[in-house]
Amino acid sequence: MLNIYKNKKKCDFLDNKCIYSPFMFRSRSLTDEKDKYGYNSWDNVELEGEDLIKAIEKVNRDNSLPPKDTEKESTMKRWDIFYKNHKNLFFKPRNWLILEFPEIFSDSTQRILEIGCGTGSSLIHLQDTTKEIYACDFSINALTHAKKNSSSQITFFLHDITSTEELPYSNFDAILLIFTLSSIHPSFHQNIISKLSRSLSPNGKIYFKDYCHMDLAQLRFKPNQVLNKNLYKRGDGTLAYFFEVEEIHSLFSNNYFNVLSLFKDKRLLINRKKKLEMLRVWIQGIFCKEKNNELENRSIDNPVRKKLRGYLRMPSKGYKSDNIIRHILPNSYKKVIVSNIKDLEALTSLNRFYCAQIAHEVGAKKRIEIVCRANELDILVLNKDARLVSEGKE
Image (cartoon, rainbow, N blue to C red; front, side):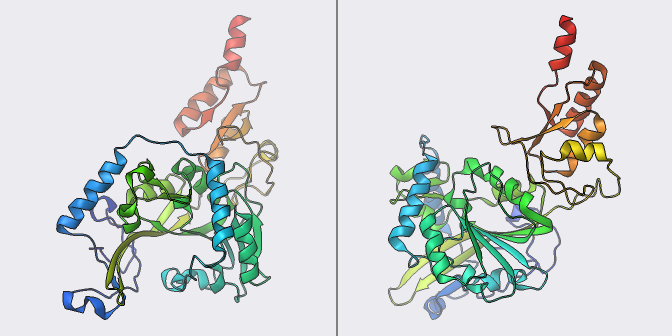
C-alpha cells in the first residue's frame, strides 16, 4: 500500500516507493470485498498473489524482447492523424486537476504553461481565471480543436518539445506535464526536462502525472507491440511509455529539481453496470526548480556578462542580461567561450547541459588550470588540448 505522509519529511523511495506526500485527498479504502461495487473507484489498491506474479512475468517477457526502431517523424504524424480523427471527443475534461494540484489555482501561480495540451482537456478548468495561460502541442489538429474549445485569453503555439529549439516563452510559475512524456520516446526525456527547467522562473514547479510501470494499459499490450523496455506502440502508431518511480526521481533530480511530491497513484476503477474491474497505476509528482545561490552574493563583472551574452539565457541571480540567443551544438550542449577560471565557475549557475570552449588567446599554463578546474566541476571542455598541441609543434 502507498505510504501517506502529512508533512514533507523525506523518506527512502527505494524502500517504499514514496519521496514526499504532503497531503492526499484520497481516503476511500476497500476493506471488505462485499463493498466493491458500492463505489466506482477505490484508492491504494494493488495486484496481489497470482495476479501479481502473472503481471510481473508478462512485463519481464516484454522487456526481454529485442528492441525495435521507431521514427520520430512517423510518431508525430500519427498523433496529428489521431486528433484529426477523434477531434475533442477522446479525452474527457480532467475534472480531477484541482484536487490533484490545488496549488496551480492559488494566487501565487500566475503564469502557467501546459506541454502537450492536446484538445484542451486540462485548460478548460483554467480559462476562466485571471491567470496568464500558455499551451503548446506539436499537432496542428490538436491546437485547432483546443482553440475552438477555449477562451481567447489562452496563448496557443505550435512547438516540438523534442527539438533543440527553445520555447518562445519563459519565466513560468508552473508547467503542466500531464500524460505527455509517456507519448514521447524515452531518448528525448532528459533533454525535455532540461529544456523546461530553462523556461521556469526561480522556484517554478513542474506538475507531472503519467502512466506507471505495471499499469493495466501496459499489461494489455501484445508482444508484437513492444518496441523497447516499457515502451510500446499502439495500433494507431502512437507510443506509450510506462515509468518507474526511481526513473522519474532521477530524471528530475539530475536536472536540478527538488522533489516535493512523488508517488504511485493506485486505483481500482469499477464499471458497476458491466461489472468490470480495472486496476490502474499512475505516477504523480511535483518538482521545484532548485534556487542556485552560488552566485547570488558574488558580483559579476561586465567582461564575463559579455562573454555569456549571445550564447545562453542568463540566470536570474548574478546577471542582468536576459538574452535568449544561444549556440546549440549537435549534441544539445550549449557552448560558452571561457578565458579564465572565473568564467568557468560562472557556468555552475546554469543547468548541466552546457560546455566550455577555451578562448584561442589563452596560453598553455592558464589552459591547464582551466581544464583541471573544469574536471573538478564536471564541465565538458571542447578544445582542452588544442593550444597545447600547436605549441608542441612549434
